[in-house]
Image (cartoon, rainbow over all chains, first blue to last red; front, top):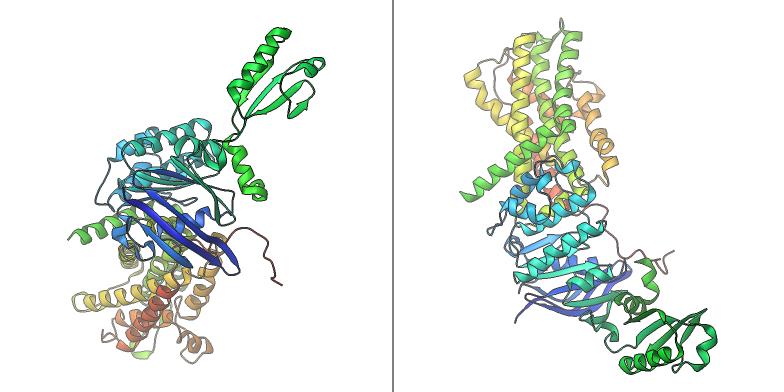
Length: 301
Length: 270
């Protein structure tokens, strides 16, 4: 499989600030990759260098085999770009704007099909200026899709969406994956990265701090399971496991051997006639891992 | 062939957007026509010009307003369109598509030309019907007039694109775009000729508006030969070329001011 995107030792300086400090990664054809990181981590700088909007300070970048710094009209025939915040001609209707952009591409998707895909069928003949922010964002995505791109860039595609609209946007990305398209998206929603991406790249302070499938990133696969439950305080002395944390009657146990520890715990509880109310068994969430990885910068996200 | 069709499509979309935007359509059209009506009413009995070429005020004023209309469509409207689209990120979006910059700007300029032609025809028709204006020696002077109109349009389109690169945000657009233009329009004899010896005229002669007014009012003066004064045309063309070169150098597709690096405290900057 060839790489749709290959980045090697990418640097970007703005005056006295180094926004991207030497990052390496690849995105294979057909892969969906999420760049995750707090605001100011360098996500947008990176993605806009890949799109050809910004010039890098140093490093090698190839997008669909082309250096985006000198990629012209032909390069953009194969790209779908959904920028972070970008106006749309306000006096045209939804279908007119899509039609206008469709003419720019050799490969074209059907206007009404794309409108339906992003859920704007009812707004088909509404002028852009009368759309809500969320609706404009969906139109953004539609404009990214109309040229039937091989590679789609999505810079924070669902920021400001209500939960329903987000699910719908996720469905669009999944449908693109099913078509074999490559997608690079940035987000600061953990669940979005978890639900959509084959691979997550966590960026903080301009460097990659972790990379991997969402299930195992940052050692998440190997991390201890957390068992939590409530039990009467008086019985804690007979408990077969040592609690790592206790908050009133709520006990938290970190377990490296979940099956065995659960068995011991439930056997003890049945013998003692305790209900173990609120029993949960969880892996650390991607959010926990992420906050750990990005450290202090996480607060900004 | 395909390129021509794409360009025609772009102009068509630009036209649609122009006429649907009340601010653009109303201001571009209404200003010149209001000025035409008001000043014609105030000065209707005046005669202007030197002895051998003295004409009714409106015979001078209709061509002057035609020039003002060209400036309105090519400079003012175009500068507003480009600066608003730049700050809203609409230009950046276009840059992310395969549409070439030449094609896109071709659509914007083509639209300005269409508006210019419509506005010129409307102004002249009002002049003919209401103010006794005549287009002298129509057949022989029309080609020269068309050429002059093109050169003036080119000049002010370039300058409109150039001034748009100085607009940092939407709020600043009206001030920046009009502050440069209005004094020039007034001192260049748009609303009636100003004495050749006055200081105002000496200043005005440095800038293109005065030359456009002179060339157009002379060409359409029935008592003059109907020759195109190439000196004026040359000055206009030079301003146009200079404006275009500078605009090309300064033109940005990205919203201004350029998005800065991470919002992080800058260390070591005093």
